[in-house]
Amino acid sequence: MKAIIDCNSFYCSCERLFRPDLTSKPVVVLSNNDGCIIARSDEAKALGLAMTGPYFQQRDLLQKHQVAVFSSNYNLYGDLSMRVMETLRAVMPSSSVEVYSVDEAFLDLDHIASGHYQEFAQHLRQTVEMWTGIRVSVGVAPSKVLAKMANRLAKKEKKKTNCVMVLEDGDHIEAVMKDYDVAELWGIGRKYAEKLRNHFGINTAWQLSHMPEEWARKHLGGIVGVRMIRELKGISCIPMKDPLENKKMISSTRMFGKPVFTIEELREAVATYVSRAAEKLRRQGCSAKVMDVFAVTNGKDGEKYAYDPRSDHRYVEMNHATSFTNELISYAMPLVESLFRPGHKYVKAGVILGEIVPDASVQGSLFDQQDPGRRKELMEAVDNLNFSMRNDVVKYVASGLKRNWKMRQEMRSGKYTTRWEELFEIK
DNA sequence: TCTGGGGTCCTAGGACCC
DNA sequence: TCTGGGGTCCTAGGACCC
Image (cartoon, rainbow, N blue to C red; front, side):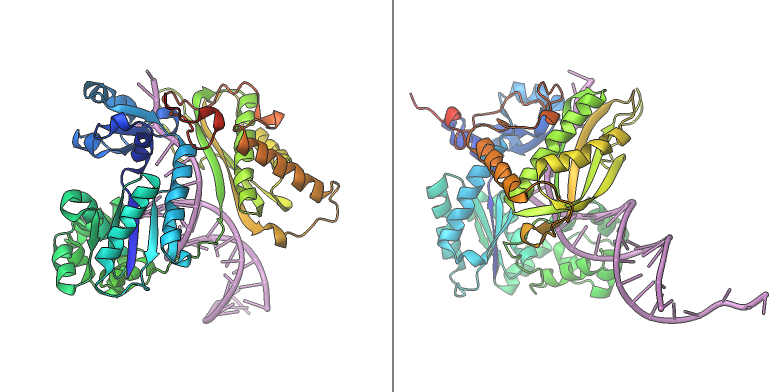
């Protein structure tokens, strides 16, 4: 059996942890740049606030109902996420925990005897809440897809289910699936949902589960669709992922707080993103061989916003895989030069690192001038300073000092758990 | 003039997730 | 005025090879 454990309105719960006065009040958290609403508490959902709705369009409604609004505070969420995951690893055999996202983990329950799932899931839920203050919901079922379904149902009826739903018995599963909208399945997005409904008259999970595999292969993304059908039948075929796997691609991209028109500013921004991506790369002990830099323009007046993040990009394969910030920046800058077009209004830029390999297997270059050992120490020192003090306490000049383009974050809460100077105070 | 079949590798793009 | 960021996996199709 598989379980998925999922934090309830995670970002909102994190904010509330340090603002107990907001318990059972509506709370929302905004995306970077304070652009969209990306998390809503139950109370905010009840007010009819749309997920990923643009903030400025809903501002009136938010004010009218005195909703507490926060800019996203990823340092805080990341730290609390780690605590939740550590709790799971303490209660479970740690190899059976797959961290799936910042607020979710799949669990392998093979060590639990049939008939004890409910009890175990409740125990998990209570332990996480007690140790971290974060409330979670648990779904248990024979496959990941069905566990996700159970989890969603548990969340929908928190009172009735006490945030846990176990789907074990065949009749129970059938009854639930007959009533479950196919569009809400994990793995069925907007496009497939439309196609299923309009072309094939499939509306429920139950109907979908009875389609032939060959049909799924043809119409539902090939092997992905076949797996979906099997998972719905309770045959687990989406494996648990190895937690030690490294990322295959690392990126850092941002909308600008204000549009950028000059190459100097674009250079600064890209150098900053390179630094950030390189940090992530070093954190997983890897180097990258290729780099892609892109910039998104906002057309001329009246023209539709071209939201293809790769619409204008340049790509370089480096002499050898590296994770040194200065080296990566020196590869990135010529890309910016060749990308930049005077007179354009840039609204976003980013960098993507690819062909990522563990440091241990990087081939040294014959023509390397600097001693890589020394540079490694330098990078570690920089990372440590930036981690323990304040972000970007040490940075490269190329990444700029003024940073006019930096994103807006007007309502960010304190980094209560990761920065001494922002420690939570009780008076 | 006639002009195969099988394989691999790469990239772009589409779909999905949170 | 103002619409996020960071990923994954899969397929189709082109280029190239023998």
